[in-house]
Picture 1 (cartoon, rainbow, N blue to C red):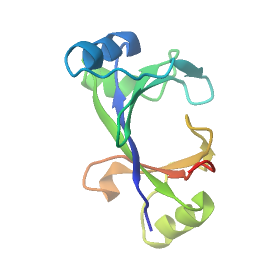
Picture 2 (picture 1 turned 30 degrees about the vertical axis):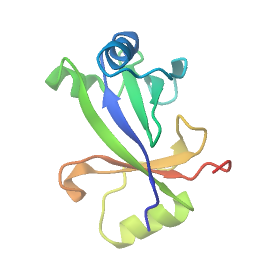
Picture 3 (picture 1 turned 180 degrees about the horizontal axis):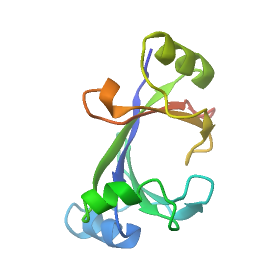
Picture 4 (picture 1 turned 90 degrees about the vertical axis):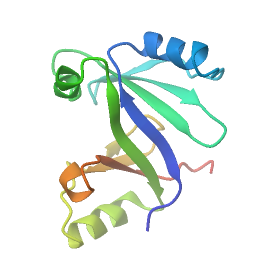
Length: 137
């Protein structure tokens, strides 16, 4: 059911500092300009790699859903893994049929397509994001 891995989400206290790490330590050279996603409570930027992306996620405001994660991991860390699916509504229904806890309803993600999240307890401790494959792929 899942398609290709789209990105790995990394929660960070500062996107700019994280981008500098990927630039100076690992030689990454392609980045997207960070942007705010107020509806999600996060600020997002991407490190573009030949085979995937790293999504850097910084809290946006005092109610950001990643604040708790950063309180437990003050320097940041892996937040989620994202896989593409053909139809997000079908994927949500299938996850629920299979007994997984889907966190909320489909909502617009950072790539401009609908996403859902599957609770880590159903995925060996890893938060899984499923995103509808972008139309340009």
